[in-house]
Length: 95
Image (cartoon, rainbow, N blue to C red):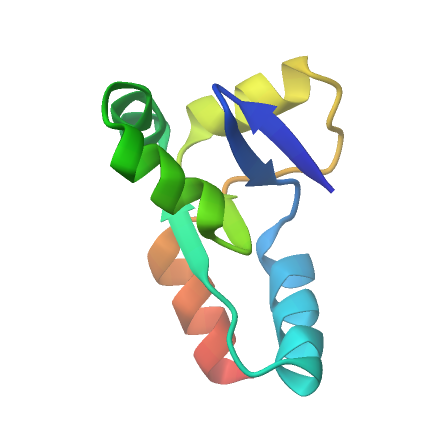
């Protein structure tokens, strides 16, 4: 599930659930596009339509910042957590 944060679909995942989901995706399809974006990227996408379109083209936009998590929680998401980029890649590499 994804929550709309300023027009960007933010994946409502935590790092563990993302790793499990992405590994399943790799077994089914060849290419998966992932973005780790925070408030800065979301705000810039509102000013730059090309960047907005790029963020909207990703399979996953993970919240690499607490403000995105707060907004998704205000919109009713319960399980979303910040997905700090280096921790995501470390966890992925260990799997």
